[in-house]
Each structure stands twice: as structure tokens, then as C-alpha cells.
Amino acid sequence: MSDFLSVFLSSSVSFLGVMCSRALLNKSRGEEIMGECPLPAIKVSLDWLRLRPSVFHEAAVDQRTHIWPWLVSILNSFQPKEDDVTCPSVTPLPEEFELQGFLALRPALRSLDFTKGHQGILVDRDGLPLQTRHQRLISLGKWVADNQPV
Image (cartoon, rainbow, N blue to C red; front, side, top):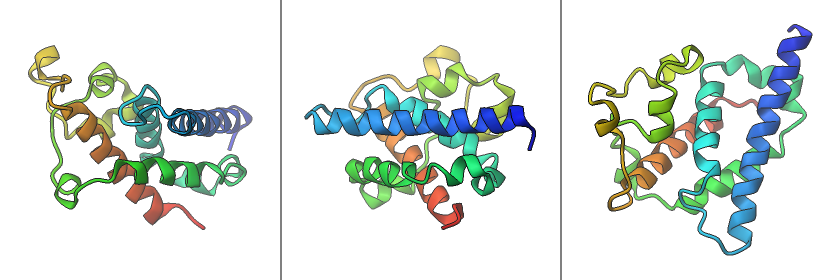
């Protein structure tokens, strides 16, 4: 791996760690963890990692294993119902809509329906974006658990 890519990967994984620690800090302060600002960034970071599974074998990831227990704590705090996890939505979240043209994430967003434009974005009514974001984060977390070397 080139020096540039190594630095980029280190920065990306460190960013994921900062976002996870921020979400947990919010929770420890008694703030509501569900739907707070770090969650979209965590989701986008995990989308990116899922498209590059070989990064789990890089030193930048090996040196930051403390991130995974933080991620598990966040995901466990969602307490999903089983049917919530198995029923994926094709409606984009706001962060997904904004990144739909980003080539590095295009494969991760391919299954979403962007045809309705801004009207198709999940808006906050009845907590729907929150639940959908949680479902997608849990799905990504399960993928990490299945694919991250121990």
C-alpha cells in the first residue's frame, strides 16, 4: 500500500473512531444516542469500509481495534425488533441522497431509489429516518462482525 493510501486509511479509521466515541460520549452524558449527528458519518464510513474489505488486513485498522467494541455498544443501544432488521427500505436517508453521485460509494447506494429527488428522502415523521438508519447501521455492523478478522 502506498504511503498516501496508508495515511488516508489511518485517517478514515481514526475518523470512524472519533465518531463512535462521540456517540458514546453523548450517551454517557445522558443525551439521546438515537439519531444524533455522529450516526450518519458512522454509516457512511461503514459503507465505505464494506466496499473495501481488504482494509481489515491493513496495519491502520489493526492498530485501532478499540473502535469495534465502541461500535458494538452503539449498535446494541438501538435494541431493534427482529422484523426491523430484515425489512430493508429503498428510500434514501439524507446523507445517502447527498452522496448519491460520489463514485467511491456508488455501489453501496445502488439499491436505493433516488428517482423522486428531494421528495423521496426520508424525513422525520414518526421517527422513520431514525429507524431506517438504525436498521442500516445494524446490517453494516453484522457485516463487520462476519468479515473482520479477529
